[in-house]
Length: 114
Length: 118
Image (cartoon, rainbow over all chains, first blue to last red):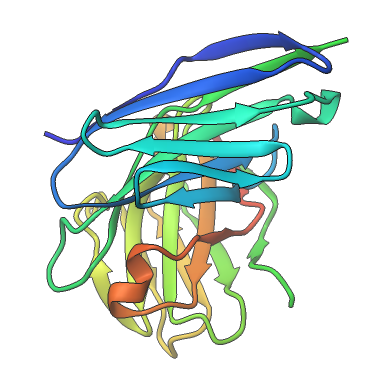
């Protein structure tokens, strides 16, 4: 079946580096998304990986290994405003035609402490 | 560009009552999604529209939930009658892409409607 696992909670210190892992099992893989969601707000897009390797965007980087069904989101130089939930979502062609289906993880709640 | 608009922002109703949510996607976005997000969980897809047609409603509890997007622009989601377990945030999202491009395009979410059923 289709499944995504990510840690429920993580804690880190301001200025540090944190890595949030996501493992998945799916067929017809078409990429992996990371979204950030602050409490009471909508998810916002952070990154998309479809090929193996590391994608860097400023303080945030995302890594994908398709053979291992594994991704991580790396946050550097942590700031207090990075305290949020980080959602991993896998895109796969599970529907009719080219319909994209997204499987969502439960999210990792990151608390950044001073 | 203006974002995805949703209303109301909050709604409190009693069980067995009815409620409706409204969503206006980003202009020109062909694909619209309604998600249910229970506290502490990831979003769960309820229904996906492509223009005014339903692409996926496999997880929509059709005995009580309904949704429409008559003119292929804004959309409404209705619950009738509501149950306690329907308490959640209802998120609307849109995407500009169709077909194979939709596979890798990010979703743009509205701020959601927080529903409390008492």
